[in-house]
Length: 467
Image (cartoon, rainbow, N blue to C red; front, side, top):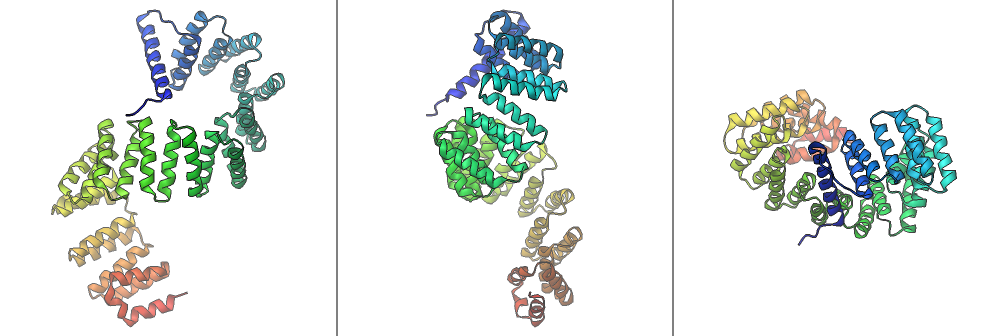
């Protein structure tokens, strides 16, 4: 049985209290929240972009908790978000007078100064804060951001490292990695993160960000180990499970990606990204019925998400249930008439059902959207050829080459079709053009056109263009 995480309960509690406060504003009835709840709600409203509501909340907070300096600090934040900078500055000065030991107040004052164009004063404020308070992760982090915005990456790195070393401020990891990337020192970044994880083996964020850096370097097996450590240390962190699943997919270990995705799904049961990802993994494992379970669940939670309808259709198509596929592809296209994959799927299924008019209508719409898709031209030529429609396949490839004149795949396909249509000169010309673009593709040509392998003219062309 699924157990709710503590974070899940916290989020629901904050959302419930947010509704209560907004209703109290509408209905004009009193509410009471302790100081901590006010601060949680303030952050929630700011994150949701409800700045006016956040401001009214903090006005209530100052009345209900007049001896809490942090309320003044948050009021300054709200005023800053409302572009009332003079009032914000006065407010944060009062907060610092009341509680000079509050690192957040130093940060907010610097932010107000920066917003009003006083960038040097903002930097000096933060530096004074460090002198007054000593090591401060929040102040170091803000200094890092300010230097980063000025493209002073070495200085930014120093402060982001301090934010991590003096307090483990998790947000500093991502910014630190960005600075290393801007400096072109990704290898040094990896070494630093590895050292950080080794020295702090119980820091889940260190392992997680090490995993992300390893993933960027395409060192997927090592990334998997790092993500596994992060998951063990923080089982209720959605991002850790998701990153682990992505790393497994990169090395095509879909059977192991699925449990990681299911763990993520426990934390976010209606997350469409995870539901779709699960479906795709099961499809890679050739388990369409299992894939369909998650696509259908995604469709239930997100009925206007065309990818979910498409996913269901693709599972039916892989089982040869073309009529059912048509229904779901058409539903996907009702939501997005330009959905390219759905157009292709619909065209293929209608063709299999013998509905050529509908099939080619869908195919022409797909071509109109993406005529540069070489795979479309190659696959449909193969489909027509398999049905014995060599002339149609030949004409289709010729048309595809108009849009993709440098495609060796289509050149080789044209050479094979021309050979089968006894157009020897054209076949040889197309074959030589393909050899000049992609020599190694000739082996695939001989698989498509076995009879040509014994023809001296083709072998002579291969020998001439062999490097």
